[in-house]
Image 1 (tube, rainbow, N blue to C red):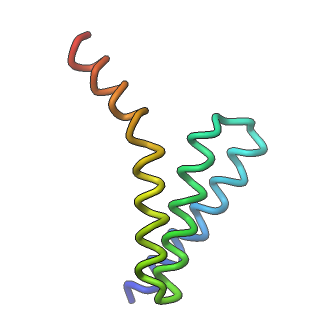
Image 2 (cartoon, rainbow, N blue to C red):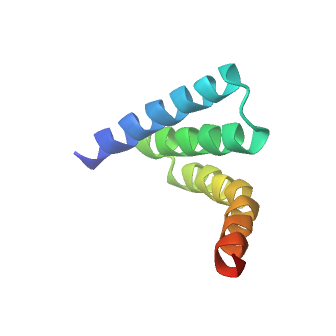
Length: 76
């Protein structure tokens, strides 16, 4: 059953990246969605190591943005 969760999450991630491209969102947001979607699809197809690399890439793309939000929240 959990395999279908990876499939749905992967499809939604890829769809989100396509919608980000059409809406002309930032590159970081589009890459994050694309990497997450690809990583989840790779997990669905039993490519665990490669999927983990894509998930890690999404985290690395998102990390600077989350640090900025945390600093703004902490220092008002």
